[in-house]
Image 1 (cartoon, rainbow, N blue to C red):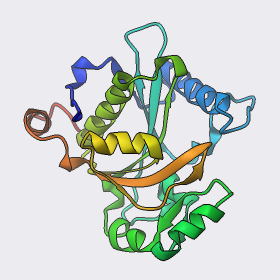
Image 2: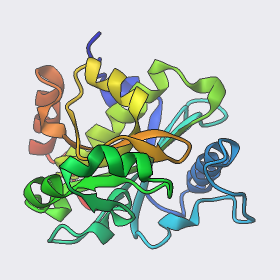
Image 3: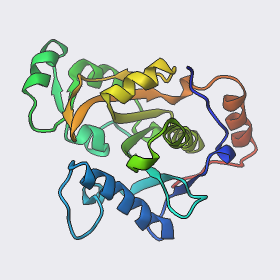
Length: 236
């Protein structure tokens, strides 16, 4: 089954780009609840994941906004840097660089919940990218009772559309390895940049995606027409 790329008006999603937006705190609380309930993090009085506070251009994509309660969120982190640096992106900042030949051993010895990135991928692929042309898909949090294909698809589709709107081409992220296999089987062009390791409670693989490789046809043309007419674009 291939990925169905629906136009944004068919998805009950919205972009929450400012902490002054009334939805912002609800997005933070849902993200925190999912991570806390899964015991990925310890509870705190803030009821939010404060590790992302140092990233100034943090944006939420929220699903289920047509209902009383939101059902899932994706946190995206954009940056203003010109050169690729690990510190710009949450997915990379705490990761350890390893040689590809050490991948299996390093993954089995990795007990510190740190992602592993292949050095050749980092130097040959990541460092050649423009930092302002990348976005970090830092978290994806969906309530257990709402976890179905439609929610995840609407969140990912809207996140890709937002990247296009911001003239951002590449996406970094750490994806549950089993979920990644499903995404790859549906045609999404994620490229692993490191081995699968235990990370935040489950096997996780760091990935890079060229969003311009999807989708083809009417959906891609729609974005280009909208950008040409200046209906979308700008800076968050």
